Image (cartoon, rainbow, N blue to C red):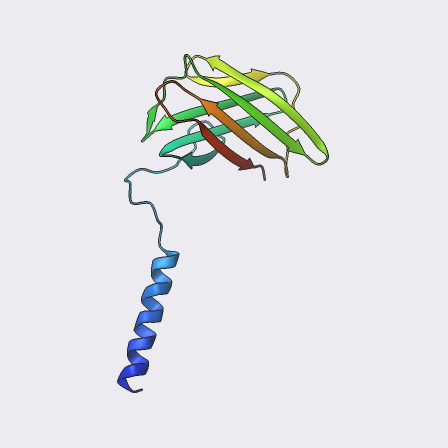
Length: 128
């Protein structure tokens, strides 16, 4: 193998490993603490727990709970051809709604979250 082919192979492998590497360089994990699905938006972890009678949204900023006392969220649930709008309100350390919700495998949810002192967050979830 000549030197130019060796250099090309090395560059290819290095670029592939950079693509495959975890892009988290901010020192915290995105773990589910409440059995839900976690997404990160603007350095805030949003954990959605979606059940047919209860929806909860937990917010963490670098692992610390976000004060949601004066916050709110509007959740849009898309399940097949059905669309449902849900308002989540503060409930202790989370935002939540109780009722009857069409959530299950294949449901897509979009949450628009407003919390004082933080930018408005828009998070998308796809239930498996």
